[in-house]
Image (cartoon, rainbow, N blue to C red; front, side):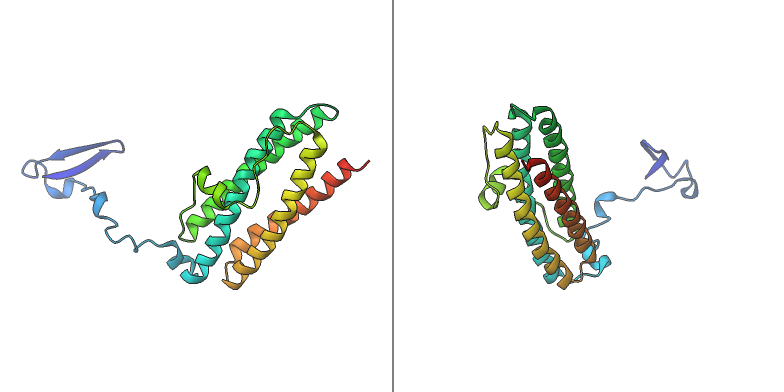
Length: 197
């Protein structure tokens, strides 16, 4: 018996007595394609040392935890902001949390590319994050100060990670961190300009 594929969404079994083998396209047994899970290791193909990549992954995991808590804080600022500047800040905080969500995804995917497994439980993030949860912030100045302090932390940590990635020969992570730094330094300048009296 051959399992054949006649159309892309259905498999059929045919007895080769009635259908010669050359007419039957056998479908591979997908469960056996990658018996040895080391066959398709990304690091083997992107040519990075696994020990050096592990150090980058460790730093990325920390940054991922920090960004997840920052994201939750930004949502709170967006929801709870009141008073003068509400319309501007409400909209800006939405932009910022969408940006943070994109970075969370990018960091998690980079961890996977380097052979790690990104943490995904908030309980894990809260144990290690250097960013503290905040709640009930309704004042724009207080929210902006928190965001500026958080960006200051990220800038320091991303520079450190950039150095670790550079030492590992991981130019892709270096590029990601460079992009983050360029964007965040500009955002700090803009937020400071907005907050100045």
